[in-house]
Image 1 (tube, one colour):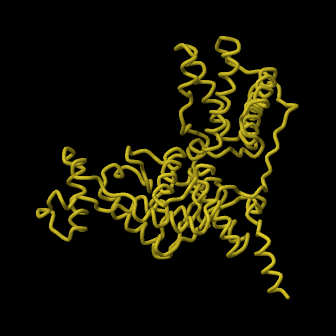
Image 2 (cartoon, helix red, strand yellow):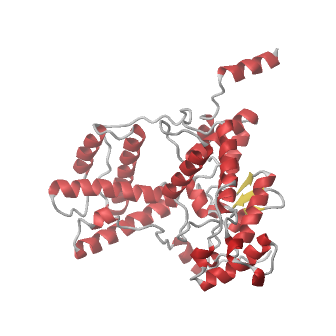
Image 3 (cartoon, helix red, strand yellow):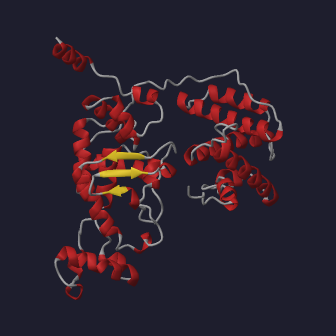
Length: 383
């Protein structure tokens, strides 16, 4: 038997955690002087690292995902700012009376039930941390906010709208114009071979007109991948080139990079989506901003995509496709919910669970809401 290659240093590396999001929100920093911000940042860092390392299950040392830890920290900061404003001073440690007062205010606010529920549970995590690390009191609120996990997903794209969004994404996006890159020699020279390839000319023969309206595959590949894989915003943010298996039309998401961090996922994509990704990866190699990263997509400013940018993108595509969303809650999750809804209709819950990378079958069950006509048709076929 070959000896294990593990070393003591590996154990230390596994326990060292970097917090991948800002510790002090700007709104909180505005309340604090220099020394108070120093103290607050130190406390926040300890809380964030605890969430990531073991916040979910302290016995098994099971932490929350980066996205959950980030949202928890930001929601707790909202709670803290409320206490500071009530007392008109920086308060380093919250107590359960503060939480009771805050959640009572929240209960009578105009926030949605889901947001109230999220605030309550994030504050419970804060007191769980204080209890585990410092022996503080746990918080057992009298209030609760019920949010059904099995409710039918709202505002998913219809089949017709999925086709419209796919077509809009095909026609959306161009490479940077010549006027954009002419004063940036590195960008211009790197992009020249790509423009020459599309214009079927040598780089020396290129003119300004050859740069006009040259289509880019970035948005097409991003949207088509999401229409197939039902990407969460956090998955668009984390997606890497190495996930893409063009030959087999599959996205291979390793456990270490999956949003729920539970297992490796092999996600099916359409053949034309795989081809769009191949085209984008080729185009992507001509942009200097991707030189030092394996991330599949970056914004025009060179940052990973987040909820705000993706929400703006889906609404832009809806506008171009003529899809009305004024009275709908249209977000990037509308794409994901459409995948779950129609994958269940066409296949079954097991296929949907695998395609959407659900940890729990109960999560997938919300897509098992076949309309009466579908169920009636099934009964007719059953005889």
